[in-house]
Length: 271
Image (cartoon, rainbow, N blue to C red):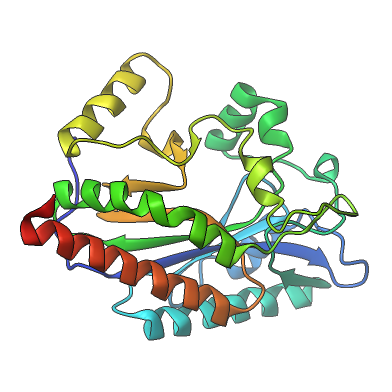
């Protein structure tokens, strides 16, 4: 499979899934299309995108050289979205789950990928009212990316524990630090991925699944860590969305350091 594992190593990209809420009631608001219309693509220092539900807003940085640059972009993106939301009587919030809003009240975004997802997974996808952060770290070699992916598997429980930020669901205190996690576990192809021998092994598995119509492409593997050949990154997806940007950045810095250690392990001949 073609890939872009050739750029500079250890660049950092961060995606945050944020809540769109009514400023008065704090209920989730199905308003992403209005926010995108108001922004009209005029976003600086990153991107603002829809997600599965109309009450979710995803912000994404460009590839950044370090955590400081990523932090500048994230703060700016949150501020830009909040300013547009405020004009509509809305606010932006961030946690792994909303404390009391119901998935039954959320509308699905009108995009082919999401319509197909609902058609295929039905209830499993409709109840996925959760919010996470995804951290991309650049890798300059495909087999090295697989080594890093394999190595990150043992760190995923720690990253989940550090990021847990979703104790409430449908008005209940669940007793879980991360309620988001079991909700997402209803999806197929999630959790800790299998170990891969090398990039060719990973590519062969993707070819088998696409040719047998199990998935459309590798982005339908929702594991907690995965190689992302289109971006030339390893993507860590296990963490709850954070209320404070500083906490998102601390987690991203830890991920970047873990990835660098694993990459250097590979470069030292321990792959």
